[in-house]
Length: 80
Image (cartoon, rainbow, N blue to C red; front, side, top):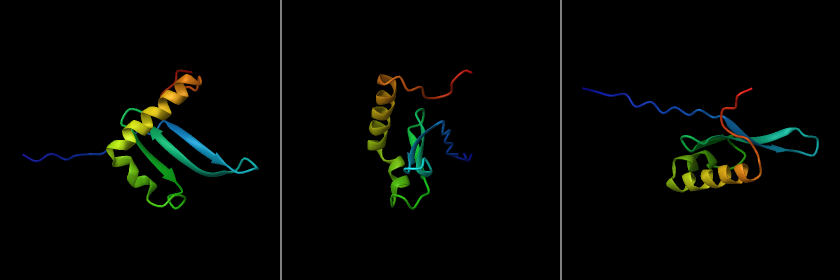
């Protein structure tokens, strides 16, 4: 019997990096459930997207989540 492993990322949150004119320079999309993230455009920080698979990234994402919670920033899927 063979199994197909599918890696699904549900990116529901983002951190935006803006210039002085509020133009988006780059952003990091985050899924707090699976602790994965990606940065776009990919060239902004070399190899940044590879960090998502490291065990240490789970701790970092939890720190970001805690920061957002402490500061009243809502995250995840929100009811309208």
